[in-house]
Amino acid sequence: MTSLKPWLDNYPTGIPANIDPTKYPSILAYMQETCEKYSSKPAFSLMGKEITYKELDQLSTQLGAYLQSRGLQAGDKFALMMPNVLQYPVAIFGVLKAGLIVVNTNPLYTPREMEHQFIDSEVKGILILENFASNLEKVIDKTNIKVVITTEVGDMLGMIKGPLVNFAIRNVKRMVPKFNLDNTVTFNDAIKQGKNFKINSEFPNDPENVVVLQYTGGTTGISKGAMLTNKNLVANMMQIKTFIKPYLTDGDDQIILAPLPMYHIFAFTVNCLTAMDLGALSVLVINPKKLKTVIKEFDRYQITGMTGVNTLYNALLNDDDFRKSNWNYLQFVAAGGTALQKSVALKWEELTGKIISEGYGMTEASPVVSSNPKNASRLGTVGIPVPSTEVRIVDESGNSLELKGIGEIQVRGPQVMKGYYNKPKETAQTLTSDGWLNTGDIGFLSEDGYLTIVDRKKDMILVSGFNVYPNEIEEVVCLHPKVLECAAIGIPSDKSGECVKIFVVKRDKSLTEEELITHCRQNLTGYKIPKEVEFKKELPKTNVGKILRRALKE
Image 1 (cartoon, rainbow, N blue to C red):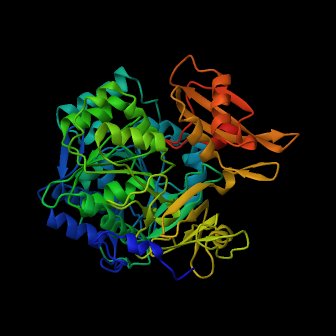
Image 2 (cartoon, rainbow, N blue to C red; image 1 turned 180 degrees about the vertical axis):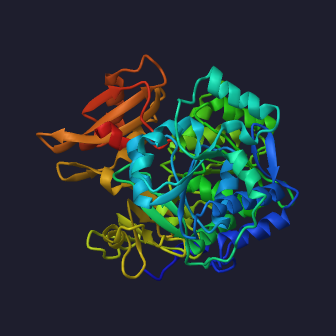
Image 3 (cartoon, rainbow, N blue to C red; image 1 turned 120 degrees about the horizontal axis):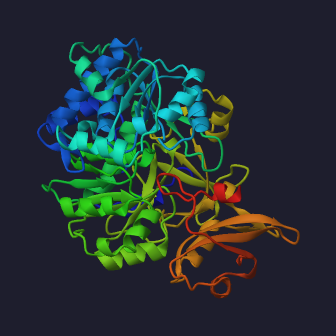
């Protein structure tokens, strides 16, 4: 089983069985070649303001030079704490050019979560959106942070729009709480000062060097820093590109919508690194929960590709303005991060004529492991492993199972992380001695190599000794026409150890508990039927849109 790769027979023409992860020795080498190749083309846009690949290269060099001038040394950790603003890609490459390690940080973190991540990662500097600086003020004395750069949403939006946007956010919407941080410098001042210094590129930067500390989502426990190397990220970028290319028309300028935040590994690798390798324009969206800002970009640009999660696609399908917007140029639509529900996938295809290509990945794999290929997409699966990737299913003792056997998914390939930062015990539990990554996800492989995710191992519900997977329950409940969203968890039961409880957001206010239970009885076996139903106005989600079952349990 270990050496078999039945999925290779399903690779479309042109997709290689393997990629060469040593093509670029580092992300910087790749970035340098890309910016020279596409110099005059637009690389990123926000609210209609674009920067070219050449401008990205120049600005990131100036920022890198400034960071070195502040005494930061190669190998030091530097946190980025912003939503999708134009400063983000500049900062990513500026930090890497200075020889520092990027620590992507969710800007919606509470002070407690910030303190954990900054102490755990040992960050020495940070670039933070001013909206969140008051939280940094509460914890900075407990950290090693010496360099603080603040920025505002409009800082790169031009001489007219920029100040107007900043004024509105600060004085009209009052979204910037007061803060008092010593020795701060603004992003624009840092860029200006960087012109006065020459960047020093003499630092170790080989394929095995860690360049990003990407913290796990923490949806099932304490967040850990996955050490991602140059090789990991270069490999995954190349793997993803092989699967995207067949969807795209050669010669066309690609415009790829980036509604997911780049501090999340999905958007970081797909919308930043891979989109750049395609010479694409990445259209940034600050807050995809405001659907109008997403839809506006479809009217501003001829969007040819996009990434998203199930909740975003579901929300767009239920928005009248989106149904009338200009999505006719779409060639590639990708879903990841959480399970894509069949009902959403079918409705999307019915409306747009385009299939959502569902994939699978995790932070520890940089993140993409598998995806559905063009003209061979299989609904309900997360596709087939990307090039140079092995996938197998194992039982609780780590023994490999036959095809179709349900067990834990293990992954091996050049995109798999080096380990967790400063956590040898957790690393040993997650990575086997021969390089397999224990994903913690339950699934199975079909005879021809398509991977199906059943659920998270930690989310599994045990009812009278039977395994019940929340994904299955949620899929069934969401088939009811009056349901907008659903989440299923296990709760204690005197009779069966655990039983199923569902949390439901109504699409139709007339929906009753009795209707839902009747619907479930028609589609689920007895022990899987929910014993409790709770209606909610909304479900707790990560900033990417992944429903937080853990928060519902708590």
